Image (cartoon, rainbow, N blue to C red; front, side, top):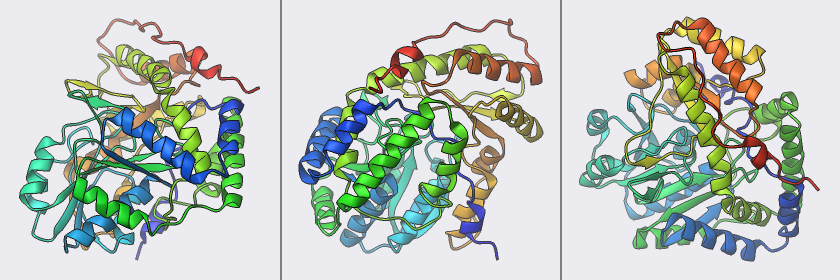
Length: 428
């Protein structure tokens, strides 16, 4: 029998690059002995930025999800958690770690959010919580999902790991449900090497979460120093475009072989908290470049046949962690990915057929989720980070245009934003 571990050998390619220089790593190193103070300052900064009453920081996003589920289970004796079928397998792994049973729910046509009709079928008197995810940096509506879940007596968790700082209807992603979770790992909006967070405006639930967090340890000082040194090395490799070594570290040595592994559950390291606080202050500077690169892709690929470019919901401000493209012909998608790889473009498949099957192995039976199955075979993601050069963007656009027919004028919009300005963070 195939196991989830065997299915999840590959991650999502080279990490999404956020510019961190030597100055920032010095801040992280200086905080290695001030755990409580650094975490408190980080959490205050997060609270103000998100506009919520309660924030706590953890070692990772998956640890944040696990802790939220443990607290919820203590208040309601139910054992099922509805999760998206198009999501990282680590979400299912966190549900299992909490001693609960994941139930797969189909997603919307672009992968974000949940299909409301399928959610109605999956809700029951056993449902403890419903997890909905904001993917690619695009926030999605959660009101309908919350209404359905709450009517069944279940909590709602917003997985905003890929959409930190994005807004919809004027509210930050992750702040509309009972709990929001965030990640500050290498492939997220604001990289601080590791780290995660929970936020809530639910007073009773946040009190329960504090009880659970009170039982959790902080990483030791030796591991903190080791983590800071690894992060600084990875930052230097990314800056110098040594993506081969970075990919090797990301695919194994850094976090384990796959997203189905067990994971530590600890409070946020002080060095991570200090670095995260600094990166929040640079949020607008960093995301403006991603937005400009995404707008350039959108203008250049508009009118190409055979692809669909998911658009953010109305009334939202995305952060464009990645630029998603749905290629309707699977063989053509593989051809595009192959050429992008040979050109050194850090494109990825986001989630794959293997990751979908891994999620299925976490459930009691083999769920059928047509929208998720369509997307895992056809979606790819283009990089938007600030280390993306003008030549690389032109090359990526030319690859799409060389493979797909077009009815649009052969025109590429000019660059919006200035990647060089953001990437010039001092390494002195």
